[in-house]
Length: 306
Image: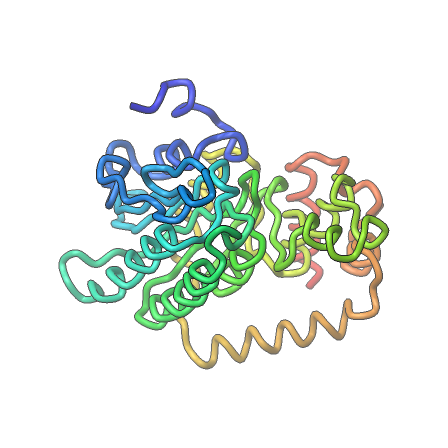
């Protein structure tokens, strides 16, 4: 039983993965697959004297969003940093494959919602985790090719780093909040390998300036920006249901052309304030001092100019 104060916690960032699912989906519609009672746990963590979790930090299942059948996978970022490993990866791959196989049947879903909250591959299960990420990427693309959109929702404590950042980039649509972060390499990893002078992971302003939700949505690394509450994520997930483009070679070519133009336009920028200035935003040095409503208004102005 999830405590009432967690279920009704409005903040996506502060909520658990299960609380996010409860708030995202229609009331009492979520049916979990391989839940804690099944005790499908990592067989490897005991070798490192580390406690496992009964769900291995990956919650999968089906439910309804505004009356439509959806599949859901949510990572618990507070367990092992929401990392991809053998069991957690297999659960997500299995869910995606089941969704693809069900297309055209009575058990088909209209979309897949990925509530990613991950630091990447679990180091204690590195080989299995790397394999899991590659299999997830393949499964995401197969699901999209079968006509089912895969929507990523990013706003948790761990962000979407490492393999999670790559998986995010493969999704049909990415929804992010200010607290969300997306990157292939995390700040701590860069600092460990290159030193704090290259990237100071303790400099929160720097971390969010480079990898944060506002920068990602301005650059097109995320498609939609929402306030950081669960209700905002739910509203946007419902909205994008009808706007996600079909997966096709034409769609991929359009995306490639967009990325090429982005590099041409921003490629010589050395820091994000330069990007914000070039995007036509006023007073870019204060972009992280304004509230969500003001930032959404800036995005609206930017869209009207483009």
